[in-house]
Amino acid sequence: MEAIIETIVDKLRYLGKPQLEVVLNFVDFLTWQSAPGVSSKVSDSDAEISDSEFEILLDELADDFIKSLGGNVPVLSDFAISREGIYEEHHRRDGSPELMVISLSNQKSKLRRGS
Image 1: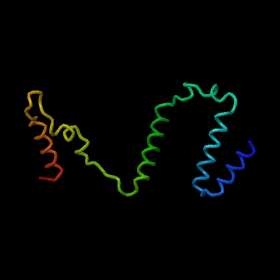
Image 2: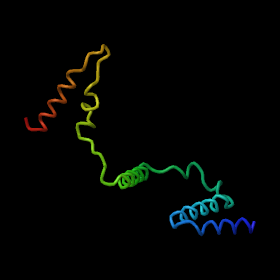
Image 3: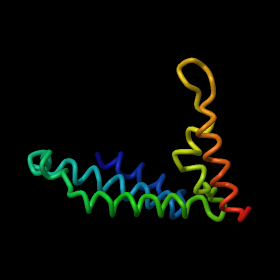
Protein backbone atom coordinates (compact mmCIF):
# COMPACT_ATOMS: atom_id res chain seq x y z
CA MET A 1 0.00 0.00 0.00
CA GLU A 2 2.82 2.44 0.88
CA ALA A 3 4.50 1.74 -2.47
CA ILE A 4 1.31 2.66 -4.33
CA ILE A 5 0.98 5.92 -2.36
CA GLU A 6 4.61 6.81 -3.09
CA THR A 7 4.12 6.11 -6.80
CA ILE A 8 1.02 8.33 -6.88
CA VAL A 9 2.82 11.14 -5.05
CA ASP A 10 5.81 10.90 -7.41
CA LYS A 11 3.53 11.17 -10.47
CA LEU A 12 1.59 14.08 -8.96
CA ARG A 13 4.78 16.16 -8.90
CA TYR A 14 4.73 16.34 -12.72
CA LEU A 15 1.18 17.67 -12.99
CA GLY A 16 0.20 21.30 -13.32
CA LYS A 17 -2.17 23.07 -10.94
CA PRO A 18 -5.35 22.49 -13.03
CA GLN A 19 -4.66 18.74 -13.22
CA LEU A 20 -3.89 18.62 -9.50
CA GLU A 21 -7.25 20.28 -8.75
CA VAL A 22 -9.00 17.60 -10.83
CA VAL A 23 -7.16 14.87 -8.93
CA LEU A 24 -8.07 16.51 -5.61
CA ASN A 25 -11.75 16.71 -6.58
CA PHE A 26 -11.67 13.06 -7.59
CA VAL A 27 -10.03 12.02 -4.32
CA ASP A 28 -12.63 14.07 -2.40
CA PHE A 29 -15.38 12.28 -4.33
CA LEU A 30 -13.89 8.85 -3.62
CA THR A 31 -13.54 9.72 0.07
CA TRP A 32 -17.15 10.92 0.22
CA GLN A 33 -18.37 7.87 -1.72
CA SER A 34 -16.65 5.44 0.61
CA ALA A 35 -17.93 7.13 3.78
CA PRO A 36 -20.23 4.87 5.79
CA GLY A 37 -23.92 5.46 5.21
CA VAL A 38 -23.56 7.72 2.16
CA SER A 39 -25.89 5.63 0.03
CA SER A 40 -28.51 5.61 2.79
CA LYS A 41 -28.31 9.40 3.24
CA VAL A 42 -29.23 10.16 -0.37
CA SER A 43 -32.74 9.24 -1.40
CA ASP A 44 -35.00 10.09 -4.31
CA SER A 45 -36.92 12.57 -2.19
CA ASP A 46 -33.68 14.46 -1.46
CA ALA A 47 -33.11 14.82 -5.19
CA GLU A 48 -36.44 16.57 -5.78
CA ILE A 49 -36.34 20.33 -5.98
CA SER A 50 -39.05 22.94 -6.29
CA ASP A 51 -39.97 24.58 -9.57
CA SER A 52 -38.36 27.85 -8.50
CA GLU A 53 -35.10 26.07 -7.52
CA PHE A 54 -35.14 24.26 -10.87
CA GLU A 55 -35.64 27.55 -12.73
CA ILE A 56 -32.73 29.12 -10.83
CA LEU A 57 -30.49 26.17 -11.74
CA LEU A 58 -31.51 26.41 -15.40
CA ASP A 59 -30.79 30.15 -15.42
CA GLU A 60 -27.34 29.53 -13.93
CA LEU A 61 -26.69 26.78 -16.48
CA ALA A 62 -27.72 29.09 -19.33
CA ASP A 63 -25.51 31.89 -17.98
CA ASP A 64 -22.54 29.50 -17.72
CA PHE A 65 -23.19 28.28 -21.26
CA ILE A 66 -23.29 31.83 -22.61
CA LYS A 67 -20.04 32.66 -20.77
CA SER A 68 -18.38 29.60 -22.33
CA LEU A 69 -19.35 30.82 -25.82
CA GLY A 70 -17.86 34.23 -25.25
CA GLY A 71 -19.06 37.03 -27.52
CA ASN A 72 -20.19 34.67 -30.31
CA VAL A 73 -23.70 34.01 -29.03
CA PRO A 74 -26.13 33.79 -31.95
CA VAL A 75 -29.39 35.62 -31.36
CA LEU A 76 -32.68 34.59 -32.93
CA SER A 77 -35.07 37.26 -34.11
CA ASP A 78 -38.56 37.56 -32.66
CA PHE A 79 -39.92 36.31 -35.97
CA ALA A 80 -37.66 33.22 -35.91
CA ILE A 81 -39.15 32.07 -32.62
CA SER A 82 -42.71 33.10 -33.40
CA ARG A 83 -45.40 30.64 -34.47
CA GLU A 84 -45.51 32.24 -37.92
CA GLY A 85 -41.75 31.92 -38.29
CA ILE A 86 -41.71 28.30 -37.24
CA TYR A 87 -44.58 27.29 -39.55
CA GLU A 88 -43.74 29.67 -42.41
CA GLU A 89 -43.05 26.85 -44.87
CA HIS A 90 -45.62 24.46 -43.42
CA HIS A 91 -47.70 22.54 -45.95
CA ARG A 92 -51.25 21.26 -45.62
CA ARG A 93 -51.97 17.54 -45.65
CA ASP A 94 -52.73 17.76 -49.39
CA GLY A 95 -49.26 19.20 -50.05
CA SER A 96 -50.32 22.76 -50.85
CA PRO A 97 -48.58 25.53 -48.92
CA GLU A 98 -50.41 27.44 -46.23
CA LEU A 99 -50.42 30.77 -48.01
CA MET A 100 -52.28 32.47 -45.18
CA VAL A 101 -49.43 31.78 -42.77
CA ILE A 102 -46.85 33.11 -45.22
CA SER A 103 -49.05 36.13 -45.88
CA LEU A 104 -49.37 36.85 -42.16
CA SER A 105 -45.62 36.60 -41.66
CA ASN A 106 -45.01 38.98 -44.55
CA GLN A 107 -47.47 41.47 -43.06
CA LYS A 108 -45.68 41.35 -39.71
CA SER A 109 -42.34 41.93 -41.43
CA LYS A 110 -43.78 44.96 -43.21
CA LEU A 111 -45.18 46.33 -39.96
CA ARG A 112 -41.79 46.00 -38.29
CA ARG A 113 -40.07 47.81 -41.16
CA GLY A 114 -42.69 50.55 -41.10
CA SER A 115 -43.97 49.91 -44.65
